[in-house]
Image (cartoon, rainbow, N blue to C red):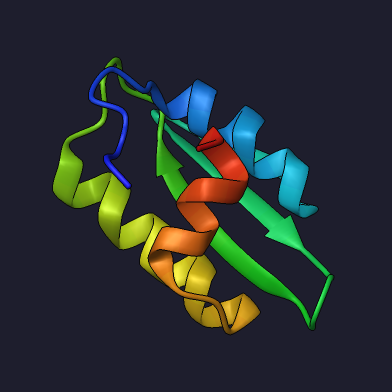
Amino acid sequence: MRLPRDLSGRGLAKALEGLGYRVTRQTGSHIRLTTTEGGEHHVTVPDHGALRLGTLGAILGDVAAHFDLSREEVAKRLFGS
């Protein structure tokens, strides 16, 4: 699946809410999200305009590892087909 090229940090944080993440704090230009599904897990998302593809891929990889899914499956759940 092709990753969105114009996704902002806030947009990603909103999408991650669908997987059970919630914003726990924001420090400067970074948003910290936490989920307790499948054990506690934290992820930090930069609050920038469009995220770089490498940054987005790394965050999705981290989320995928926590839920024991592939990165493609996480992208599909977050952004549709």
